[in-house]
Image (cartoon, rainbow, N blue to C red; front, side, top):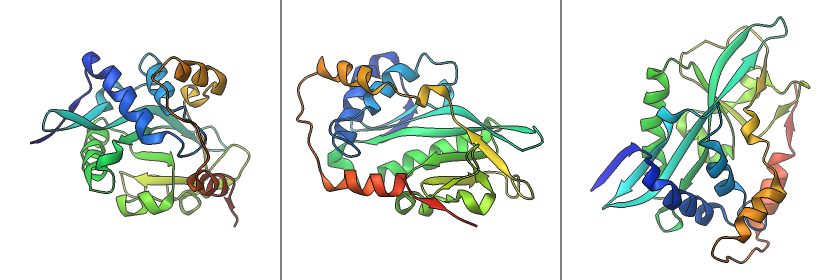
Length: 212
């Protein structure tokens, strides 16, 4: 039996453990995503209505969390939007469509709350099939004018971003203190921090930019 429901306080430890297992050694030796989950819940930008878990036969196997973000034009127009992450799927259940089901359900919730767009940083191979497109296509860039290849945009209201240039600002909760995250990790059951090829792939995509 599969259900999608809001995360509850009783789920917190299981979700952090799930997130740790899903991301460990993926982008760096160890990971910081479980620490982000731990700190995000008390941050003012956290959107509790969009904090969901996917439960299969009584076991939490996936989780997604959203925070507030914003787009700003050079003339000062501000458009509140959202970003999600982490999106965590237990390793034994990855590449089986569970993340897709959880995201699709959350997109409906985002629309219902009135947010017109979602901006994320991620591997395009994982998200283009979910309706995300290059940030460059929507003229959504960083405040310095750059268009990261990993920054992806999904319009929930078609055309809402058309005809303007936008700067993306994420929540301050994403400014993770890596040293604090590693200290937090040190107090959890040990997992081996090590290098793997996905870390080099992440380095490449995270340092790539699109040009006009």
